[in-house]
Length: 508
Image 1 (tube, rainbow, N blue to C red):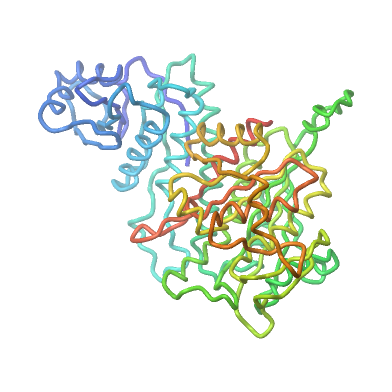
Image 2 (spheres, one colour):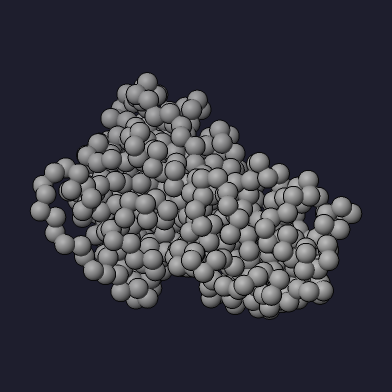
């Protein structure tokens, strides 16, 4: 899809199939809405009085208005003016993009990004507009026998109307948003694919494909023998239960023009040169192992690799945007199935770090593969390591499907991630990571148990991971509640790709 800025003398002169115009509740018009209203002899004020309340995210289509060049004016409700914020704007852009896709329009113009709102720049709003268009255009048909062509998006071009002096800033936002949307849609596709298609091998092939597409990416996929050589005993113990071979994926982004070597030898200078590492949980299907899950909704356990999909999506976006910072993605990937070779409750395994783990529940397998990846990350001497995982149902109980769970003992890192989430409208909420919770992971037969009981399940899972991160700054994102939707609208969400890419851009 093409994204561009639209520069015109007046919004009523814009020729387009659909023009998005924002209106606030209580009859308050935005500047563009006021221009359109005057050009059309009060058409907007008339419908506001009679039928349109301008609730946030609502819309009304006005066709062939006198004095207006656009074939359709799409009134998009912005809610009350004093409550308008970047999230409301993003939802308004998504409502408009959804209409354009459903109406099978090939091009459209939005004026929404030009509306000021608190704690948001024009670049961020332009980025949100492009992300919304990408979200609305996504359709899953990879495994349909006869894909319905009428459901595919026809939208080829989206422009945003801004003043000439702001065009360059807006275009930067559009370019970033396009890359983030493409990364999100890759993440969504990988999540939505069935587990018999999206296997660990498939994820590895996807990484290799990205490396062929983008010269700034380099992919390496380690097989079982190579993983054994690394002594990743915890990871391999999970993989042992499946006939599907495991894969350990390393996807490395290097800026196209490396910055000049810093002469300063301060800790800060070294940190700014060190890579940022993203670690994604890649369980391509999670039946729970011997601790078998209930049958209801077990099909959704194909989404247990959404952490891995997020890393691939984020690296795809990074490769297109090309920030000036080295970024490395690590993905341990396998299936978690019951078999004669599978982990048993009570087994003790040895991790790559040398720490032994008593497996009290085989369905707490994500942490068993992540811990070895977190140890592997040490070799890069990273500035920061962030792991992303659909780790615990307890996080859904705590936060529902609105916020991603954030765990870290690093206040500055937490603030940076939370800020990035707010900027990208992909929010997280910080949960505790206190030493007192570590007591629940005591084991009489190993250095650590893999579960800490039902109380504070998401916290003790993060505490488990923290045991393997002592040599670098680290944060854990639990995306169990935000990576996909259930019900009639079932599908991967693409989160938290926007949060992560925004964080990486801020750091670069």
